[in-house]
Amino acid sequence: MNVHLQIRSARTFLFVPASRPERFEQAHASGSDVVVLDLEDAVSPDEKSAALASVVRWLEAGWRAPATIVRINAVTSRWHDYEIDSLSRFGVPLMVPKAESGAMMEAIHRRSGLQLIPLIETPTGVYRAESIAAAEGVIRVALGHIDLAAALRVDPDSRDAFLYARSELVLASAAAGIAGPVDGVTASLDDPARLIDDVMYAHGLGITGKLCIHPRQVDVVHGVFRPSQTDIAWAQRIVAAVDAGQVSEGGGAVAIDGEMVDPPVISRARTILARYSADDRPR
Image (cartoon, rainbow, N blue to C red; front, side, top):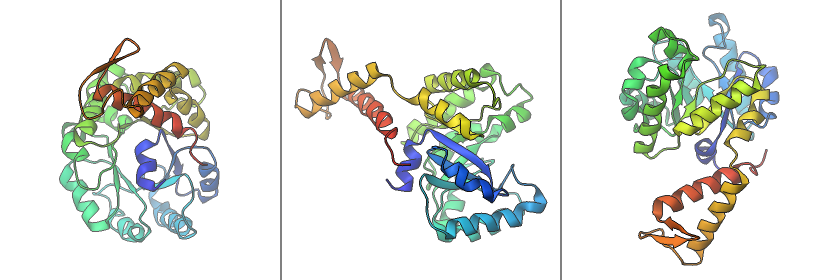
């Protein structure tokens, strides 16, 4: 599976500070679908150069499963341009913080040639989510609700406060034809029930991935996103009916086992089976 497809289907994006290269191997062994080498919030200003050098050495050693991406510093920072220049030759996707416009994303993509995951974490970014998701080079969007909470002066744990933002990212992603968005972090490391509840809530809105800040969150998130056996059996019946020629993906509706099946139903069935097969991806 190429990196683009890995990121499209990824459920977990595990951050690891780029200033802690001794943790890179552990992060890649965690089972996370994507590992995010973080040059931004996790790295102090006086460690930025050394952290970038560690990322470059890691990438020079060759690609490793799962997918690796790098969160660079914001466009307005003094490190941004040099990071792009240093990373472009590796083809590594970039997570771009403080994403605020489609034009910003396209400028980064055209300069670097790299695939982008904009991190939408400002009011302006939410307001312009549609143009960001549709921008050239963008393959997925993520929500940075902690920074957004500070800007809005609200509790980052308030679901009501972020219902619009989450829904806007879901709609913008669907309109752009890219994979569902990635939800922000759950800061409670010792409360798996809270993590499960957060993921279930976000998934119910149409969010299909989660930013993680500790390896022990990974399996919990995967468990929530894993389809139930009932859903899998249903999806297999629908796809089997398509394969048998009982219903067409090109249009029309046919009753299968007492349920009306049309192209949107078939699409949902294939999505469920794709999520199910994601559990069998190589580690």
